[in-house]
Amino acid sequence: MAISPGWKAPDFMTDTTMGPIRFHAWGHGCWRIVLTHPAGYSTQSLRAGIRWARTCVQPVRLLGLSPLHSPHLADMPSHPSAITLPAIPDFPVIHDETGHIASLWRGIEVDVGPENPALEEHAAFIIDPDNTVRSTLLHPPATEQDFATVIHVARGFGVDCAPLRHIPRAA
Image (cartoon, rainbow, N blue to C red; front, side, top):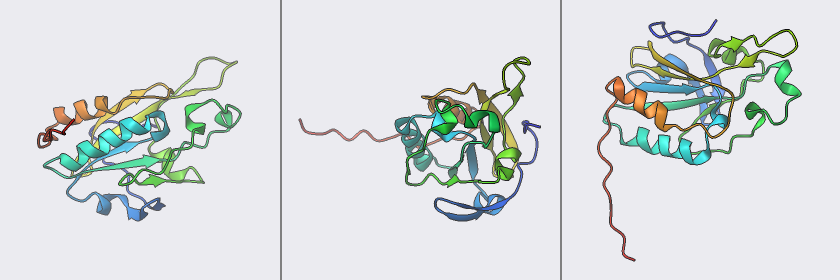
């Protein structure tokens, strides 16, 4: 079952690329954005999201889940979840070999008929400082998603950031 807005975010303990975390303690007092398939976003878009999170007046933390381990995706090398996500500073990624944590945060599987495997929706969850899911953004499996959409929705919940200072550069 997919997580819906208004539900309490699941708590778990695991290792990430930046060390171990317990989700509720890791984000205590912070807004959090969990991406089920970070490889669906371009590296440039994720870095822009990290810069945005650093400028927020209220703390915002980002977390990525390694691609879901689905048997029907294993045979599809061009599927976005098969893409290896490069290491990005300040963006912890969970490598969940068992798929247990990913199953807590999965998107919605859509049945497309008896001949085709289920298409898995990718999701971005926006979680408030009280561990309540405020929004679930779903998108189809595709690369080059734009993190600006996530930022736009987060701002709608009052996650405001200080304006970026433009520093002129000499030509």
